[in-house]
Length: 306
Image (cartoon, rainbow, N blue to C red; front, side):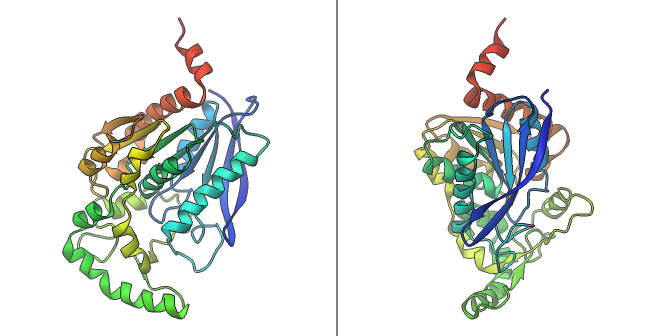
């Protein structure tokens, strides 16, 4: 197990900057690097550090970042979720690590969870120079997720959406909706495990806003990153929950099987269980093994030698 150091860094993204943690394994010159991005409205404090630490202990550098408009990253208005800008944040993170002298910018992987897992699919299709990608409980189809929410739940978001569209035109403060809420409430995620699962990821003492500008609702419904899986030329690992209440697994698996160099691992743990306890241990072990094969083939060969 390799020791590591963690550094507070930032990189330019559009009109502002994204805040990030850079993990550097000790005694590893020019290590390969894994870029980690989170899910719907989440910040890097919500267990991205746990995955990044394990990757650093395995000899990888890791860059865990927070999208602009959220957490301690820059940009206004706050809590604005723009799919286009978040994908641009991924591009900026890749450019940042490729330009750093302390990591190997030619050996880069992307790792995304939930909504970030959908972004990882899109980014992997757009960046054939990457070495690998990991999509954890990925959001792959907005229509499928909207169906899971149900028509009544979707209708409950309509009044706030209308107010926020007016706010966008007038450039006033956004009208927001909760990211996670109790079943039957107006929120983006209302499965029984959504609110407690989301809250379990927030460290004590961390300020987290469980809300997002409502204008993103139509964009989420139309976002279908799973369709890009068939265009991914690099190896990609899909980690899928068999009981996922947020990103329906049947549709995810259909998309995952179209990836030319895709690998699929399924787990009985729920969408929000992936970050904690035994499910986390199983996931990070599988992901580290995959990343070692793709980013550090010499080390992987040596580890498997008799």
